[in-house]
Image 1 (cartoon, one colour):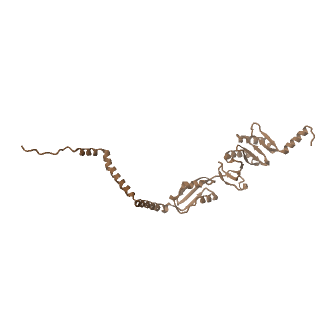
Image 2: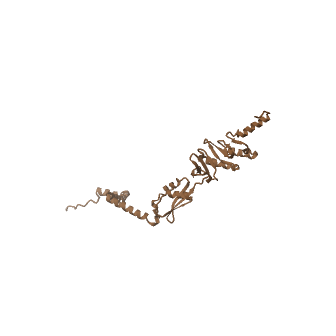
Image 3: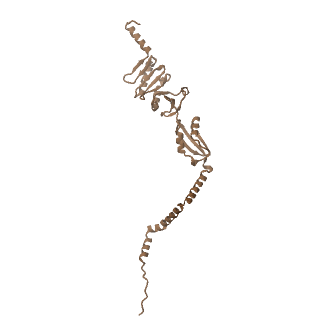
Length: 291
């Protein structure tokens, strides 16, 4: 009987079996297909970039490409236009933004430039953008002066919110604007405008408003007359005085002041001449000899 030939074992080895099992795992196949190439690429790129000369080549190439793009004619700004501003304010804006045209639009920090324009006292709001035609457009909303404020620095123009518009060197240059005086009066421009509107019947005699102790207002009329208003409900108190004046011409008399600081007890202050005349009349009525 002949010796039987040995056959190879058809069962896979343990290592091959485990490898086949790993290849059946989706995560392992994904890692083998994408993870290993990415890791190799990252390693090679990191090694290449670790050389200073190679990094400088990339930086120089990027800077050159950027310069070529930014200096293209379609990205160059050739002039600046300012709209909505007076000539004086427009000149101030151009001095605050000393741009050397032509300049690339990529070199313009529009937000910082807008903040610079708004920092000017006469400018309430501004919008900057590059419009068609390669023009830097500056749209300005100016503050409109509504009152003159006299303080330690002189005459100043204020808008309806109490913000400084600019200096006023001569009162005669602004005859249409009412005058307010006193420390802290700029914080109460809205209240002052309400009082000025209420004093319209006295406009021919109205001279201005004085802020007293940063608490209340005095209305100043011609002939050095004053209406002393209370801290609260000042408009209503002024309207009462105007009503009394319209009823019997109270303010046409020899009065120095109408004191309404205590609304429940108004007081009339007469001039020295009127007081002396009143004393003389009372002496005559009492039969006293005149001096």
